[in-house]
Image (cartoon, rainbow, N blue to C red; front, side, top):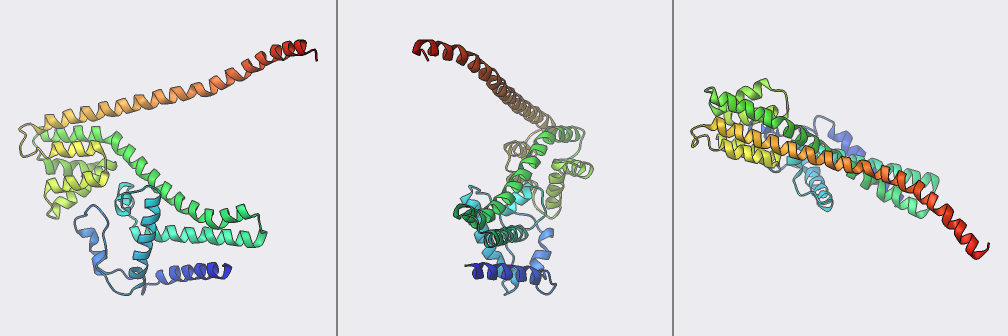
Length: 298
């Protein structure tokens, strides 16, 4: 068992060393040109079908990582999750880092088990629990990054949509207004609008570019904004519709904030209640014990 684990660790180390050399890590033309083609929702696959190291490891890591994520209740593909988190890391690189961390944790657990010889329960945790915790840690970090970015997008969206409505009311077209906001802004929404503008300049129709943005974000507020923007060729006054949607999003954000405040205010009473009940129980226990002592005569 130990020899097998050591062989796997050495093999993983040799794989990482060979993957860092230029001959093995050479990117195929399809991957080099992927940044200049329209992004589609879902997982992108390389067109290279050779016997290179990456083409060999990628399906294995992808299948293993997808099964682990599915077991944890994650249904969204990794490429979309990385995009929602605002990371430029490729899915293969993320899975490789995840498996490397898992093997490192397994190596540390085996070394601790061999060196210290702990009890059986601790040994099971060291050998099986530490690699699982390593995988869960990276998944939780990615989930937290997605939540933080979505919170920032929710906070910025009403302001950006109001700016978009003012530009359209001032005479700008929809595409030019989005281009202006994306070029001048520095937030999360501005970065997404820059991606939308880049897709439109590549030849993608504006409705498809907006739908791709809504699918990649996975947020109901963005989907509603995209539904309003789809009325560009039908509505006579798109600026007022966008302003109304901005007010609705702001009101929804305000309701969510009030809900969070109310929930936190209720949590404040938990330590107060505990701090009040414990001394009260003590004061009640003293006369009760005295009365019981008088009755029993002890």
